[in-house]
Length: 282
Image 1 (cartoon, one colour):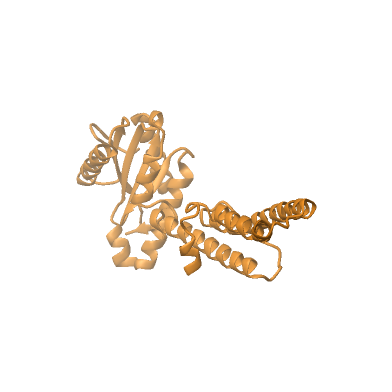
Image 2 (cartoon, one colour):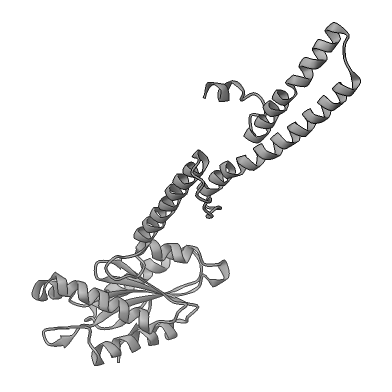
């Protein structure tokens, strides 16, 4: 370590060039010694000098080429930390192979942990759909010309009674089943997420309000025909608030949809309210 630091002034940004420089100096010491001895004694033989110079240059070239090749795994280790190298070295058993294998395993484990943390941060573990953070990240990732459509906030009606009367396990099942129902009935370009508790949010990509209302009404009708659960003998229903989104800050559209959802709950539930006129489910 001391030698490494002491020689850091030689090409401080390139270990390869630093090693090449030291190798060049070291391989030329015999030639320099012969020249010094010859000048001191006046006994330089031109033939011997030429042969020694030629062999010194040849040895230097071989050393530099070999050292460069031996340094390639070190550079591959640096690439591994940046996720650019995945190939493993052959089992040769030396320190470079051992170091490479250890760093490669550590880098692979770290990338896997980062991927897991990203999923955990953006996905709801109960329902498998995006969570609030994941939903907002998906909208932020949209190109500017695709940031328009409708957003809806959906609330499962009387969900507290499901938990109180049927138990939390049944409540979890209802949440997961409702998320599956939404995902199955929406288009691939639409986005669904769990907003929190029994609330979900949907982005209808490029859809007009009438199209989004029709889509939600179709899901509500299917829930009556094929219920995901019952409370007091009645199929579990939902209320929804809907608002247009014209591509500006989505917080305004979400706030309008939340206000419309409150109106839907106050108007008797099992209905859709736009951020404007009310649409009764049929």
